[in-house]
Length: 158
Image 1 (tube, one colour):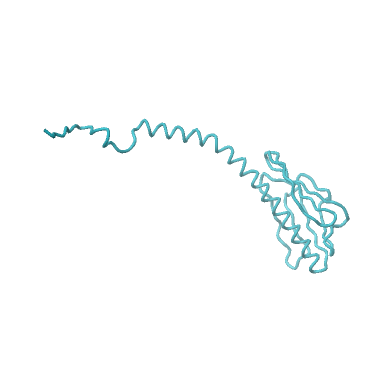
Image 2 (cartoon, rainbow, N blue to C red):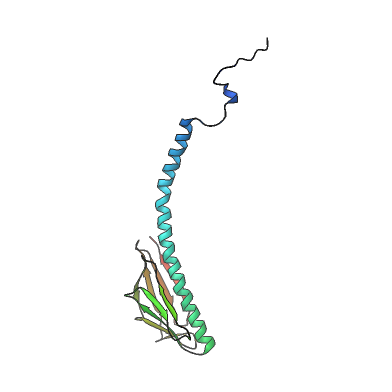
């Protein structure tokens, strides 16, 4: 009397996998999450480009300041605001122009187009120097070189 009943659909306990309805619900939930997350990733990437550009400028400032001190010579960095790049002249093999990403531009400088690091690590002429970079979202990075040569960046991200 222990007969097993066999049917074409199988019992509920032996069913494996997902139904089409369950799979469609999961896909819809993933689509909603992606629709919310993608714009946030785009903002993060755009602001990431600004941070990278600011760090590149900061790195070149620090490098030229260090070289000026160690080699007992003046080193300059020249910004070409119209072409959105900068160069480091005066080296044995001058660095080719460094271009900013398409959406990043030099917004303003407090030193004109050339900043010179003197042998003591200070800038010429004396005083705080700033350069402001802006991206397509309106976020800014302001790089400041203090009178004593301290270099730092402040961000205003949108």
